[in-house]
Image (cartoon, rainbow, N blue to C red):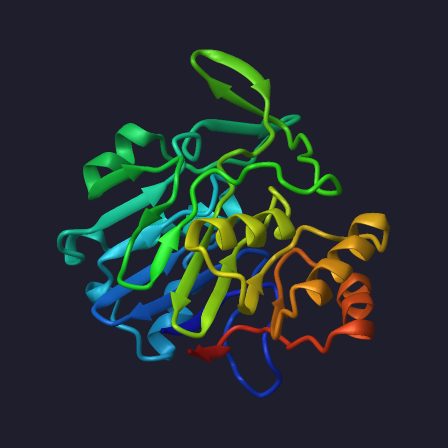
Amino acid sequence: MKLRVLVDNHTYIDEYYLGEPGLSYYIEDNDARILFDTGYSDVFIHNGKKMGIDFATVNTVVFSHGHNDHTRGFQFLDKESMENLHIYAHEDCFNHKVDGEEDIGAPFRRQEISRLGHLHFCCGPTKISEHITFLGEIPQINDFELRKVIGQQRKNRHWEDDLVLDDSALVFHNNEGLFIITSCSHGGICNIIEYAKRVCHEDRILGIIGGFHLFEVDEQVNKTVEYFKDNQVKDIYPCHCVSFQVKAKINESIKINEVGVGLTIDI
């Protein structure tokens, strides 16, 4: 597997890509060419082309969840050049989502996006390539990672508090273990890892990349660090929605890796 960071909040010095508060990865797994999230704007396209990525070869798009900093960029893609496109998401991903007066959801509904490719709604684990599985809805496993309400969503013609149950992740599985690829981890990064272990029947964690949605150093962060240590996570790449303070706290116990646009991970 080869993963490249197309969008993140951060860029590297002397590498002249564009950053924005969003996330997008380009992933190759044998013949699969996967876009995992598309950021907020067309920045991922600008960066990807500068990296030499041909978006016409992308055959799979996966949305981690419906928030606009992960979905809005999709509207800027030239979908007509992408043949036999498969799109994977949780069934709540394209619901109308608001936080107060602000629209925070995808700028398109499921009817619109279903016309652009083969749309797969997956609430359970779904294989999307030889070694990569979309985990679907993340169950509550740990007692220190309770889901939090973020705004409201319109579902079945009614508005309801949004627990972001559509938030999911990918797991890469080879004969050496698991590599977790997440976006915001609204369901809890440790819940995600634990669920991936159960789905893949594998306890060895090669690494993690993604946002953990952790901003304050508190009991949840302390227990997250202990979980990483207990599971002997080898490589940690926190990005997007992880504060400097939390990164520093993790780094006190486990050396973390810096993430910015252009990062390449080969496994």
